[in-house]
Length: 49
Image (cartoon, rainbow, N blue to C red; front, side, top):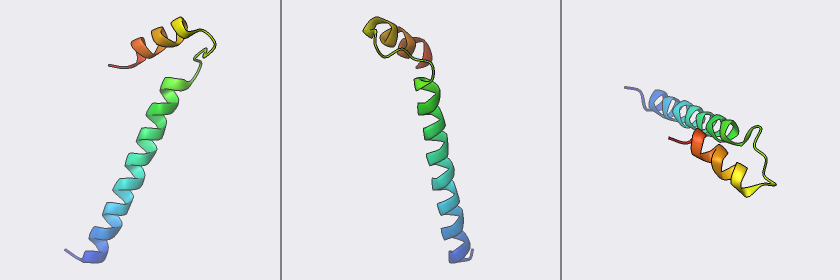
């Protein structure tokens, strides 16, 4: 396979992985009340596997 194509595919894969990680972090942090530690712990407990 062409090395330029391999490099381009690898770059696209890394960009896609970064977007997925940012979306996952955003999902975990949206609508979370950080002022109450018990609510924060509960929110993280139900959102993380």
